[in-house]
Image (cartoon, rainbow over all chains, first blue to last red; front, side, top):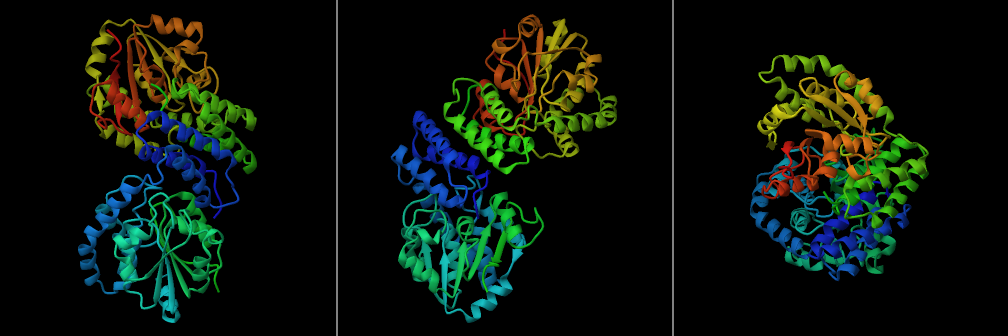
Amino acid sequence: MLMALECLPCFLRQALYAARLSTPAADLRQKIVREVARLLPDLDMTSTPPENSMLVYETIARLSGCPDPFLDLKKTSNQRALDLLPRLKEILAAAADPLWAAIRLAMAGNVIDYGAHHDFDLNQALGDCLAREPAINHYGLLQKDLRTARTVLYLGDNCGELVFDGLVLERLKQEVTLAVKERPIINDALREDALTCGLDRLAKVMDNGTACPGTPVPLCSPEFQQAFAAADLIISKGQGNFETLSETRAPLYFLLMVKCQVVADHIAALTGMPARAVTTGDLVLLRTPHWR
Amino acid sequence: MLMALECLPCFLRQALYAARLSTPAADLRQKIVREVARLLPDLDMTSTPPENSMLVYETIARLSGCPDPFLDLKKTSNQRALDLLPRLKEILAAAADPLWAAIRLAMAGNVIDYGAHHDFDLNQALGDCLAREPAINHYGLLQKDLRTARTVLYLGDNCGELVFDGLVLERLKQEVTLAVKERPIINDALREDALTCGLDRLAKVMDNGTACPGTPVPLCSPEFQQAFAAADLIISKGQGNFETLSETRAPLYFLLMVKCQVVADHIAALTGMPARAVTTGDLVLLRTPHWR
């Protein structure tokens, strides 16, 4: 998905938020936001938003001297999600179709995202999500494709959210690999978060070799590219992974909560739905149209 | 009120919206947003947001060649408000205190603002506003000050909204002057809008000599500055006028709907209220603390 003009003010808003997390110094915060503004006119509008955002967050890290401003938030969201685990397991135990229930919880867990949204009540958001039907629901197709797939690559998204992803991973009968990011970027999960959330007991954990809040395959490590090419089925979690993979020809299923109208419009266009048929806050389980 | 870092992404968002209104050409829109981004690092953070916004909107007008991108929206909102007038008069006829009812409607009319918000349902918004108590309500003080005031200067804000202001103007027993902006800026009311909305029958109409979405007194015309200095009481309508006058020593009453948290926090600080006591969407009738 290409950059939209809307991404430019959004990057600046994100820069302000990250600057606040990075430093208490008002002067330095101002310098960071100004320098990010200076980057905007020269961003590559023919690339994806997550790829461009790397330059934004690198600038913030360089100027602030803080390489991982979201570290505390990431730890907190891991812990909050782990605290919820007993309740989530109860929900699953009562479900008629535990895999479907796990997928719904994993979509709901995508509400944890400090890049797009800053304030949310996890409990409230979970309840809302579980009460809502996905705007696009290709679960039937996923069940069918899972019947023949022997390997699944699961592209993780954010910290905390990983705990919800684990509910899906433990129900997959395939050989599963979980991919996370190599270096800190926003609140995206790293290998250490996967370990904290106990995901190494459910899947092989690898990183994709980037500090991109998405999965730009050509920029990923050779090991990851190989895993990507070899997987029978790939579950791509969250908006950043979707933004970088929406045009990629691969056995992809996208699982996300839509967090901005640019992405919503892109999903509608991709699936031949009318404009505004998808909107911010919608849950989506989408089989890519760019596959056999 | 000084610029906040939050104003920078907000300006860029506004630039994108105005660019869309100004031209259908995607390339030109992109150029406009990029050029506005280029301005941001050098904006004067020791000035007010409306004063800085002049540079933003001048840039948009210069690049697009469209001096008044909001013209159609302004005409539409004048007409929609005039269409509502019979219903508004019914509400007033049934009110125990018609001046108070008119003030509440005028605050509610402040929801019409294409700078801060783009989508709103006027009917819905009116109902919501009338059902809500103002977060700050100095109506008792206003009644008292009106008893001794012989002249009132009313600082108009947006098109459409003017019709609601008229309900207040026709209930004031003082000699009233309505000030509007001299040249197009966002959807702020000009002299022709005051005439369209019939306000010249209720007050002397003058412009403030600027194309600023506020009232930066030192930049205003000598005639306006004289009227400002001479008025026994000034009613300042809307957020832009508040932002430029919040520190001015004058007999000011501010009447507005709060449209961003930066302004909300400034109001809280100004009135000694705890942080977050005022929030976006709040209605405010505030007697300035910077007066006798």
